[in-house]
Length: 236
Image (cartoon, rainbow, N blue to C red):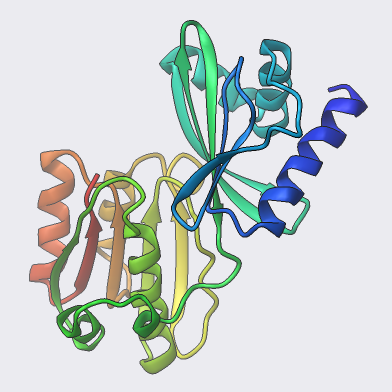
């Protein structure tokens, strides 16, 4: 990648961080756009994005293996860590044969559960010892943030063995009173099904799975719950 392009990308990401944006969007023929406090605005002091810049940005954000997946599936969701300063959830799809890139800036710290404005019933979930909890919502509704906050609250209050099985690890959970293992699908386990299967004969009290889809995955999640574990499933 050209040095100039790298400098521009780093400057844009710095701008997003400084303005505390939640998301950033890139599409050829448009200005870069930020979403801040729910409002979308364009960076009209920047150059209009060119197809060549989009290609350079794809090279910047994706590994060679991920670019193969993008070209095959015409979409990809992954995590990129920028300069050890910020983690980005990267979503890329195609429009008129050109990649469109969306970046979600993952907060550095997991918010306190009681700061999210959730009903008391949700706050009480942290007291559960077993069962199946389904977490749903539309894109951008805070499913991952809510789940991370719940797990972190348990981590801070109880001594448990916690396993997460995630397609993309957004929030890094740090051991406090609990011991936490985070598995990424495609890297640590081949599929969510494999992760759930392997966990059957391991010592975990709590399991979180992000994106259960198949009948077999649901069956295993229920099997864990029936065995007396607390299972969180984020709906896709």
